Length: 319
Image (cartoon, rainbow, N blue to C red; front, side, top):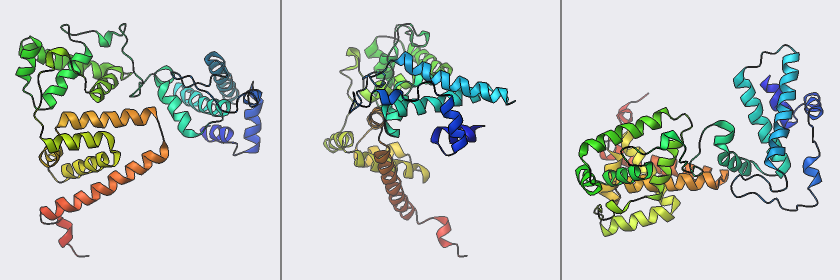
């Protein structure tokens, strides 16, 4: 069934494409706006084109999808709930591409911006705190933003007892916070809590009670930290080095701290910043380039670690 569906959406088959066109209630929708819009304008929040309404878009997707589903069932196909979700997913992509005359990168940006609405799962960079979400209710008066600020200080190497003292509560409260918030992350199937935690982490959030708690950092470490915030290639190099270190039994986070002066909290914060920026401004060409660069650097550092450890075991094996 899905081979036929993909063929219909891409026009790979004349007959299948004919069936698809017969089910399209507004085949020329995008043509109606071709002369009026030489360049598509997008709503900054939903990333829908401003030349149509969200209601019209959803209705078009539903009509195409339901017509296809009806035809499948009429021909004796057993269409399951997962099948229906995939059918809607593919028609949503088809309609968005047609109505906005856009490339796949723009379509993915749209999917990220609307991931909760259409898939029930959040995407980093697009989550907003909702006071009505029970998973985001404060624990012992501590909301997720404050909990994240505490985690950042502790990950930076500040003793949790100092953090508790600055917050004005007993260590037992921290233990409960550090149990309940991760538990909520595990229970929240929309990943709202986890994703929002990551966004706060990327912002390197703090609260007034913790502002005077500073993790020590050398001048060189500060320079390297500033660099990985602005130099994506340098960040990818260190990410590759860290991964290579772990593969050779070395604590990658500690290695980064020892060699570049960047603690775990700061490194993870920058990692989340780059991931969020990537999601919000999706560019497949850039993503591939950075991924390849990180892999190249990982191989370079792996060779370095292997040499420092006397070479790989397989180096002495002849076939």
